[in-house]
Image 1 (cartoon, rainbow, N blue to C red):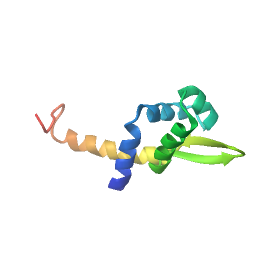
Image 2 (cartoon, helix red, strand yellow):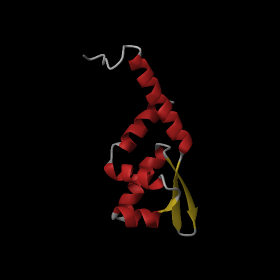
Image 3 (spheres, helix red, strand yellow):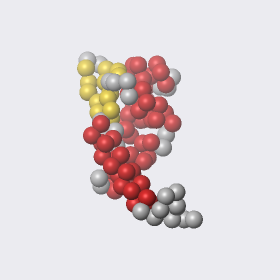
Image 4 (cartoon, helix red, strand yellow):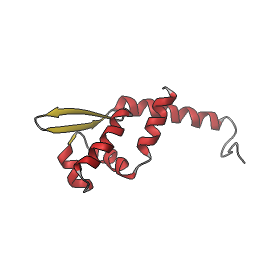
Length: 102
């Protein structure tokens, strides 16, 4: 995974509303109207958050009529998990429960 993509994903995870959106999308695809109801935010605020999530590749969107529907992009999530797993494997080579900064 490219470093730039990792940074975008990190930024996407750094906002509480975006975390809530990702948690809601774990149930499956949702219409923007449902996300608005659940989060109690304005439509422009939701658009801002969805743009960040889509640019990071964490969420896919599709338009149906006047509404946007969103779903998790599992391919990106699996790729990001592989990055985290690689970091954990690198740390495990130093010894159990041993941090390099200690």
